[in-house]
Length: 318
Ligand SMILES: Nc1ncnc2c1ncn2[C@@H]1O[C@H](COP(=O)(O)OP(=O)(O)OP(=O)(O)O)[C@@H](O)[C@H]1O
Ligand SMILES: [Mg+2]
Image (cartoon, rainbow, N blue to C red; front, side, top):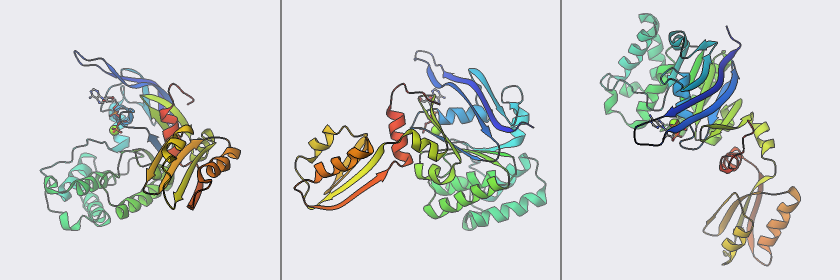
């Protein structure tokens, strides 16, 4: 078997519909993902994350290029690929007319699991996902968050080596989300590979061993969190809380050309790219002759890096 979970080569997906300009949703991506890690795909809305996952999970055919999953080509060997993956895709339909329990059992049987094993796993997952009270209800009657639980619980019914999760935590409450993150970690320790997309950057920061940032169908940056932080060295978050918000503060902040800034009541937050030595100069200029209640300076978070990298035009360093 291939040592790589994924091998993507010059992959392109163009959506063409009559009367409209074609959309290059994935515009020439090439990357590999080793087995046994959590790989995060990050990018703003419309970046191409779901399209990429749809090609990797054989739901959509690439326009150009190739994608291999555990060495099997997604176009030439779709059945071999499907046997080895399970996925929660953004618009994955749960079987709305089936109960929670039957959703799990049907999925397991479809994946070739024997009946006794399926029943055992379904009970364990119903407990883990706190679906006990909903077990006999039709999925169409559940709230969005509970539907999501059923979708995610399904992929744990089987032990496929590769898991694809498109924004798995949408609609989950923080406790369940935390529990899921621990669960995903444990699955990887058992040797599975997880490919996930997320908009929740703290989630990527906590979970992913390796991150690919994409924007407008192209790769922007790749690496573990520390590498990405290095790429974005010199990005700082500054918070200043004033006794009384100075009238001219918005204009003063604007002259610093921050990556982003916000003013809330008496507090300003700004993210700025500058040399280390300038940070304290900026802080003292903004606080001169003013009563400052709180000052905080932090190094870049993944969110800062994300904003900086995805707002730069034409920078392609992946
Ligand atoms: N079936 C389709 N037909 C036409 N265009 C599409 C289709 N699916 C996606 N697109 C377009 O392709 C681009 C990428 O969409 P995609 O859904 O892959 O982005 P995404 O990164 O998953 O976004 P989000 O964070 O909002 O889920 C967008 O411009 C989108 O409008
Ligand atoms: Mg998407």
